[in-house]
Image 1 (spheres, rainbow, N blue to C red):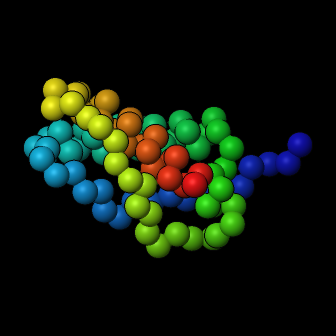
Image 2: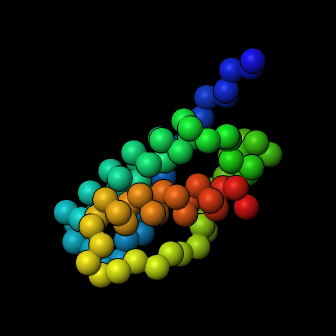
Length: 87
């Protein structure tokens, strides 16, 4: 069984329109936790196996309700990014 390659994932900018700065920090934390979980539990995304770096990723969008908790928004954001890396 071969060891999985180390992955360094850095998001320079996460655009969150319409959220307070407090919610933005909570969302960003949830994104980080969920991406860590996904990279740990899932196979390496397709785009990362074919390219050493990715300058930009437009992962698309997802529907969110105005009353959704920041953690829910962050978790869904991470899942959308991860899915975008697999396209």
